[in-house]
Every structure is written in structure tokens, then in C-alpha cells.
Length: 524
Image (cartoon, rainbow, N blue to C red; front, top):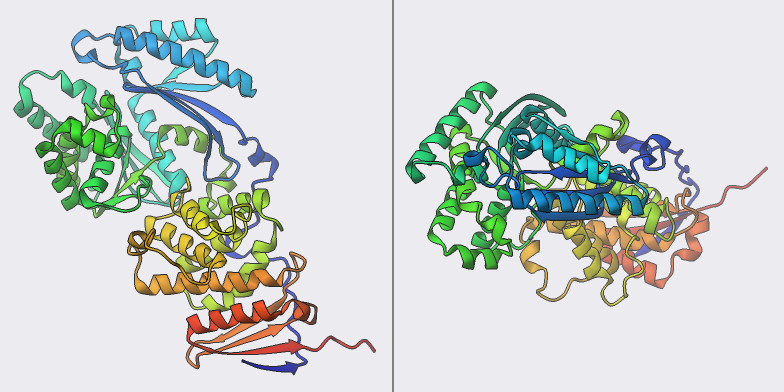
């Protein structure tokens, strides 16, 4: 390692937030979303969620579900399931009491297909109002589709494709283009309704095919991405993971192909349902609907012919949160805003993440924007796990990144981010614990993540004031030369350990490294 001195000191950068914009989580219009409580009264389940939406990527402050099966038998009787009605009323009563104790009452409550289709739906809403004071908004099918599509947009800003939301008593389709919701249609293809259909499996198959063909005709050609929303779809995705022995058990952003859907439907048909339920950790109520829901999905994929299929954990409830977001927050990257929020809440020196990002970016100057986005997120998150025990900090960082409830992250990006943060705290990875996950990304992506982690590991040793650059990197990839120019005030920080970490970074780059200390300016 060579070291010399030069007089051309780098200029300290002006405050520039770059393509990611100024942080918004403390904006007054955004802080209003710090606690947003919603209740979704569905045909199969009743759920209450309290969001902390100020970070753009929703944090689930409170989340509780009761499987009530309100829509069971509705195709035969035209009325809500009596036992389900009692359970749903008890659940909503509990939820409103919780909301009052949290100081967020009244909740925003919506009811979907079962309540809107049942002859006693209005009576049920009147019971809820009388017992809890909570007004239930009964929404129609197209509005249900729109809200579900908005939930998808919460996790995938600017996305495009076809959103399919399946509930117990209905199935909706919505088109999204350029971050906006387009055409919306609804149908009665809910597994609770299809369960009681006359004529057996053959008649049910023909009916499903006819209804989906009609929906496709209404929607027009939709051969982009298919987004799957709803508990039955998530259950099928979990079974697909089990069948494939897929290592990352995170449903949001899980991808399937039309071929894998066909294979999983066949796998479900050939499996013992109870054994499969236990292996995939699904509830009995949910598993009972999976075989019929899988028939619907097989026909949907066959007729729509999507290029790929993505599972969304965000749906109607998240769409209700999105509805309340100001446009400036909707347009933001959910990953970056959430990382900024985490840094402000948990890092030892909030704001240093931006300084670190600016410091290490020369190493990724020619990288695509998707990689620069990972560099930004990692820089913001590099210190949020400092409270973890030092012996396990690297593993905690990896586990948090790969399994965190974050939007705007593909599974491959989760592993990339986790690997980078692991190397922020550890020079070498060891043990087989995460090796199966590493295989989700290419060798080149693993190399980039390691370089990023080692760059952060070195940069974190040059802590000064958060808005002052400790120096700058100059990276010449063709020559394999790395130059570090340090500001005079950073010289005392360039210790033996820092020098060792810089050498490790250079080794990962397969580069020779030179260190230059800038001369302090002389006043005249």
C-alpha cells in the first residue's frame, strides 16, 4: 500500500439528495399516517391492521385476523353464515375496543362480497353500528378491485400488469399502468361460492373457464405481469415454495411461472391435503379452499398467458392506506423511504448514511440504477442493527434484510442487501446457514454485494460529523487502481484497523490501492 501527499483537497459536497429526493417521513402531511387503522370484513376472514404509513413502506403496528367464513353457504341460502356473523361481530367489537385503547378510533371499515351480496348484509352492518359505533362501508366489486390494485402500487410504484384479488366469495381483476389503476372488473369466482356449486367438478371447471374467458374479454389483452392478491393465492404460493424447496420463505414478491403454477396445481391434486397443510403451516380453514382456488388459478394463467407471476402481500387494506397518502409520498421509493425512517430511528448517527453513500459511490459509478439503489439502501441501513450482540450482528443484519416486511424489494435484492450488510460487520462469511439463500443471486452479484459491504465496513471507521466528507475514492476499474484521498481531519481516524479494512476492500476489487492525504489549506 502506497501513501503520498497532494494539495488538491476535495471539495465538500453541497446538500444534494440525488435521484431519491429529500426524506419525507417527518413532513407534517406524512406524519398524519403514523397510525392508520383499517378493518377488512371479507367473505372468509375479518382482519384489523394498524399501519405506521409514514415510512412509505407500511409497518404493521398491529395485525389480527379471525377466520369467520361469513360467506360460507351464501350461494345456497343468500344469507350470511349465522355462526360466521356472530364471530365477525365479536371480532369487530374487539377491534374497535383495541382502537380506542390505542387512541386511533374510529377505524375505517370496509366489507366486501359476502356482506354486499347477502340479503341480511344491511342488518349485519346495522348490528356493527349499534354495538361499536363503527360505520361499515360496503364496497362494490370494481371498487374492491381498485383498492387491491392500489395496494399493489404501494409495493411496486410505477408497476404495470394485471392484478387478481381472490376472496372467499369473489374474484376481481384490475389493470395497472404507469402507476395508475385502469379497468376493473369483478366476478363470483370465490372458492367459498364454488364449493357449493351444483354439478360437481366437471361443471365447476366449465363454469370457471367461461367466467374467466368473459373477464379476459372485458379486460382486453393482458400479457404482462400477473399480480396475485389474497389469502388463497398466498397459500398456493407457499405450497409452490414447499414443492420447489425454495429457501426464502417470504411471500411478498415471490415469483412463479405459468409452468410452475401448472406443476403445483397437479402437486396439490396428488397430495394428501392434511399432510400438505401441516407441511406448509396453513390453517384448516384456508387449506379447505386451496384445491378449488388452484383450479381457478390454473384457468386464469392458461387464458391470460402472463409473462411472469408475482405474489403480493399487499391488497385492499394497504390500498386503503395508499388512498390516504399524499401524491409526493406515493411517488417515492418504498425501500429508500423505509430505510431512511429506520436510520433516523435506530442508527447511532442519523444522517451519516448519506455521507457514506456519497463516499463509496465512486466504486459503483458505472453500475445500473438498480445497483445504485441497493447501495443507497445499504448505506442508510448500515448501522441500524448496532444493538445486536457483536457475535451475531452480521447474521442479524442478513436475517433482517431478507425477511423484513419491506416493499420494493425482489427476493434477489433482499439477498444482495443482506449479504452486503453481513459484510459490513464481518470480513468473511462462515458456516452453511445461509448458503442456499446466496444461490438466489449470481456469483457476480455476490461479488458486488461483498465489495459494497467491505466499502461500508471501511467507511464506517471514518465517522466525523454527518455532513462532512472524510475523503473520496477514485476508482479506475480498467487499470485496477483504487485511490483514496483523505481530508486532513480524517487522518487520525486512518488507524491500523482502518488500513486493514481498506486492504480487504482492495483485495475484493482485485486492485492496487494508494492513499493520499490532502494538505490543509493555508490562510494568507
